[in-house]
Image (cartoon, rainbow, N blue to C red; front, top):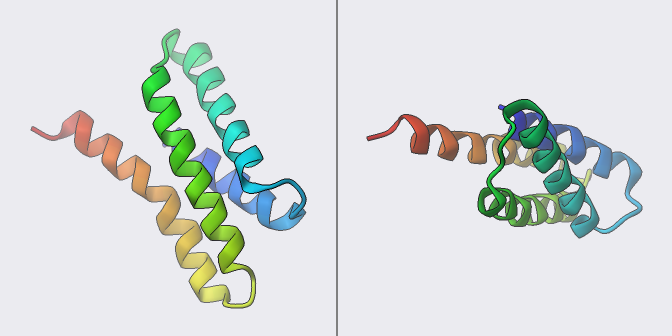
Length: 96
């Protein structure tokens, strides 16, 4: 759930500020994941954090390219794109 919340927060900030490129937001997202993993769980998975960082880069780039011109499409990308990693993590953890 933390991954989705961080993606939603940074996705909205990126769309509002529009200044740094999308890879800067992805690096910030990865840093947040690493810090949250170390603080809350006293453990972290660098491989998972790197994979989610690359996903975040594509997510932020897609959000930026979608833009505000087509608001329903942007909202769909914004919400569904943030839920995809959470769904895959839950499938991995609770699936057979």
